[in-house]
Length: 407
Ligand SMILES: Cc1cc2nc3c(=O)[nH]c(=O)nc-3n(C[C@H](O)[C@H](O)[C@H](O)COP(=O)(O)O)c2cc1C
Image 1: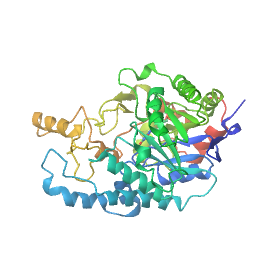
Image 2: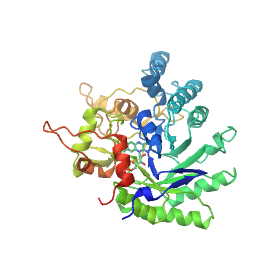
Image 3: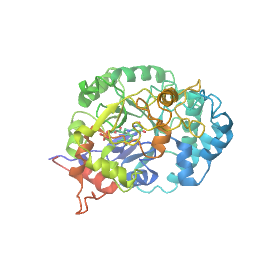
Image 4: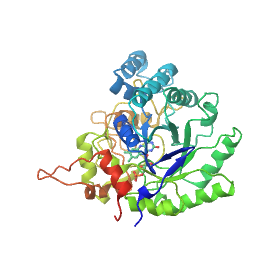
């Protein structure tokens, strides 16, 4: 019986074990997890979500505190256009977090960073550019661009000396999205070095509608993407993601033509995962009916999460003065209006049902986003007499994908 270790992924001229650990924000795919993935010969992601807050956590900076001090006089205003990010700070935070991780890297694999376009940060284009340049300056091996179409992302870094050498990838959920992207990058004569095809069973935000995600199938979309690349005579590795729970699931996709797989949910319950122990146990205990796709994310994209997530129905005061990663260029976030309405209805007991303050809740690990197969995590561990599931190591999960056969 074939196992994932029988195959190798080739990106540019470098070979890897064909396992990519997906970006999991905010700081769920931690530097420690990324270092393990690289040590074991695969590719693992840092996440750039709330990068200044994450820098405060690891590098003892005070970006969030300072940002609040700068903006607090205007905190009463509903429109947050005043709360602009300092682009130099964003670039510094990204560069320093990346370089402090890259300095510790050992082993044959690579560390990439996942950048999300939908973190518009009051100034979509410039903040994205600051993050891209910061990551390149910090020495990152590769960048995967997710959550958005990223039509101009390559343009934003085209003058950087590492633009042609760094490994660049895009995450898409359809052939159509990829077609648009390829048309745009053709002008630069710089195609992506890998394409992640994220299907409907993935964790985090989804590239499908709330009412139709279950009609799509990862293998079908992957084959469609490969067909498009063949038509365009492009030889780019295709990496499916979403609901790949075992090495055998992965082999099945590789035999169909994929070059590797991107996986995430099984790593949420590892020792290296940033999630607090309480959340990890909730993931282990999750039943199928606890896993839902909803629209509480103010980005407007559907998101999959556990119904037990403390963020659902919380009445958090908008915290854009400190963070503000979802603010659009007009200084607006849909959570602000949802909060205002909930406060008007019940000023003494504010509970916001439709939306969540994603920055505050993700920073506090209260949005328990997860993949569709989270209810299977309990099969992968052992439960002690006190009812606590044993946490796994990144290495154990990685090797189970690498060498595992059967289900
Ligand atoms: C907890 C969690 C957080 C995630 N956060 C992000 C993210 O910040 N950016 C992103 O592009 N994808 C994110 N994802 C998606 C993963 O990177 C990955 O593509 C997908 O979940 C793979 O499917 P699986 O979880 O079924 O293995 C997240 C997934 C999980 C489980």
